[in-house]
Image 1 (cartoon, rainbow, N blue to C red):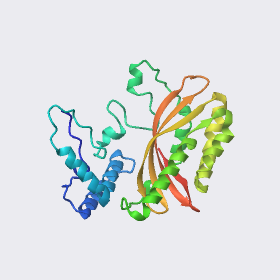
Image 2 (tube, rainbow, N blue to C red):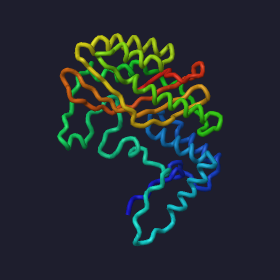
Image 3 (cartoon, rainbow, N blue to C red):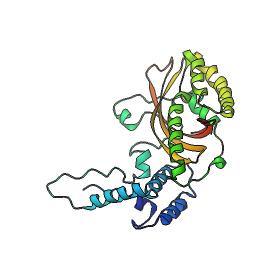
Image 4 (cartoon, rainbow, N blue to C red):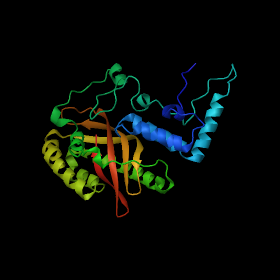
Length: 276
């Protein structure tokens, strides 16, 4: 028998008959002391989004009821319901794999297959990870929203889509085409962040990449909305980066996470801050 998957109610410590006010109070209490980059923060937000939306909650309750029905002995074990709450540790850091950090080596499965694990010089950590760190600001700019509020839901999704488009060029570059790489990223940045980006790009990447012939390519794995209102949103993204240079011609894979703060500027969602 498989281990039962905890429900959104279990995650928030609530009875299925809890009121919306109870859900909201439990959600606020549990995230109050969490950093937005904590994997539990994202999962708690997901739970609140489902349970504070009457239509989604009704459908979810029906799924839980169906899952609780006994299964015929000869039948196969049912598949997990699609919206059951994931364990935060297993959701964002599968068993056997370290939690995402600024730079991670090849995962355990790759090691078992004999893949080479690179030892990377400090100044050459894909360049872009250092760029992201240099642009990090304090968490004082963060704010709390009521999840699934009808008047910000569309804005939040638009900000998430814009973050997904932006993160790939921001975390990528090609030593042979640095001007194009920089321009591809600049179009997604607010004016203030663009100034910081240009300084770090010139001081780190343009200085080192041509000599090492480094190429970094980012690939989006998944994203989720952390917080949002009508004009600002924070989006958490998991990103794989592959790197090659004249010393390492086989692509090296790094698993990173980044949180993008998106501001709406003249009707367009742009990246105002980034943290890794």
